[in-house]
Length: 381
Image (cartoon, rainbow, N blue to C red; front, side, top):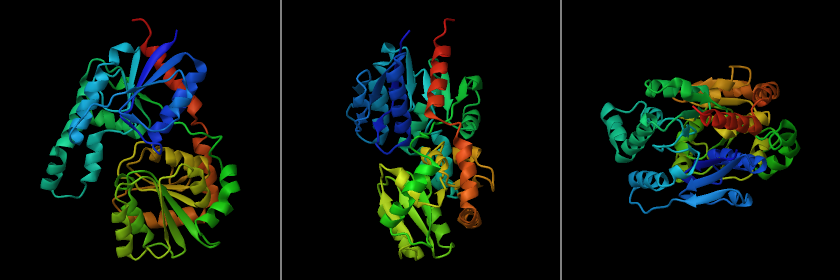
């Protein structure tokens, strides 16, 4: 039996981790032919899906005014198609979906971290802002909808978040399925083979030690925390900042105010070749405010880089302090300095353990677990 599966993702970004996961799934199902995939999206700018003739892209792009109505209008548009598929797997909050892949975690948890330390009245204004109220309402409606039969969480952290925010939801329907990583593309051998040339491209000297922060949306990824930690590190430690950001100037200004815009920073922006950055780096840094399971951290580990990540990142569940790297609270930039130095001192041994920790995590395994879940949900009775 061929399963007709709709994957719902409002907007595709060529640099997004969620899109890598979806593209890997489409490719795998195209080869197996037991799952026929349709992508329901407002926009899909990359040509990846076009390479697979069995995959249909359905454009759901109704007009809207403002971000809040953008979410609602997309849900309304997609809802018209749901009955045409055996299973609907949403990567957005979509009341009526059969499966929700919580790749972005829970919006309420993100708002808690974003407003941490703010006065109560200011926190209330953030939570009551229309765009945030709509997002939380859609999410709650989805969890309360009778159609929702399974939730895919990509880290134990997200499993715990769901239990906390939605205690009435049947937790047996929450399935932990780790993200995959392409080990043929990301490995210590490939990283080392590109190291010299990419350090030269980035003008890194022999004695320079490079930290890499890679991710889109720099507020969420904790770029400010990384900059404040860099101030306290030796002058030969540099920071590579890569990823998509709508307002990079605010971080460049902060770096100037902190006195670290004197060659210790490389502002790289979006990249389609992250391996080149892993090759140039010595340590992967991700002080995220809230990050469910960032693909970049898995790729960095696969390449043999030690990590220092936040306790509000799903990657924390793969790291034991002093072994693959360290886990620290993003709220305390001072606490990141010693772990970074320890990673720099033991980069080879920690990087080897990081590589070994993610060896079991492959896209093949992820897709196999998705497919098993689909079969379970479609069993008669």
